[in-house]
Length: 392
Image (cartoon, rainbow, N blue to C red; front, side, top):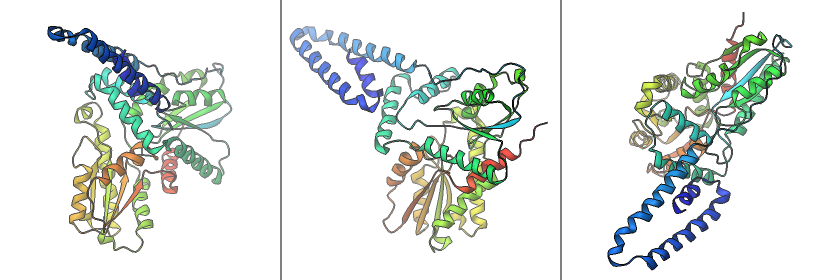
């Protein structure tokens, strides 16, 4: 019972933490009391049996939690085969997604995928502790603004189409890790008569995330409905998106000499083992950020005060890069969660926490310019990718 309750305590929704904490405390008191009553002298050697029992309970509940199925809703495809639709285009705005409130299903799916691909990540018995740390971050920030921000971004994208005279194209939001899934959004679009579908991939790089989404989508037999489908591809090669970083710093520089400004583009990073399966994720993220730094140099910033860093897994770490900027004598440091499309736990919690531990002197102003978010330049970059699609 103790082993089972430990896992439940580590992984349940925050609204149930107190109940499981009380239950776990009670079980420990009973456990200690029973040991005290029944073991003495040489019998202490048998203490290993209940401890192994606790481990067994922990293991069994860990298996159960990590076997949780993804029960996100996918509607029935009610459109009849041969129905060519109403002639309009549907744009499926597809991005990573992050639940507003703590929900471990996204990471459970990720664990499962890594196990299937034999990619080493977090040891099996440590995964409940990982989910505990994820929940702790949600408690710290209150809730993730990721979904709300992407909803706003898609609305801005639609408004741009409408301003340019396109009143027929329809838009559907979808997420890899949240509701609705991309296949669910596409089925809705098909049921509403779409004749052409464009999946707008609002990601930075080609990775297992984009592959998962495409796999879900391609399970639908579009030929039955005479529907054409195309994918925009991620935004790592978008010169428009790259320009956003320079424009945003320029808006916040407030008269400081560009030669005294430090800019740090922080990527997420992935273990080198993952690069064997998805090398494009690291390659494209590095290429994208290096191209951004070149734009800063062209705009008058000092190359020595521009740097790349990683949140985890790779070098240089954020602290190392920040200390380099401090030693260069900068007056301001601007940092971005450069690969994050919209406010998330990473940009709202992890990055500020990493920066706060870097020991930056008080005389240096530090400004978090966050994720991409609903910047007009970002929306323009997304639309440019869509505009490149041509159907026969």
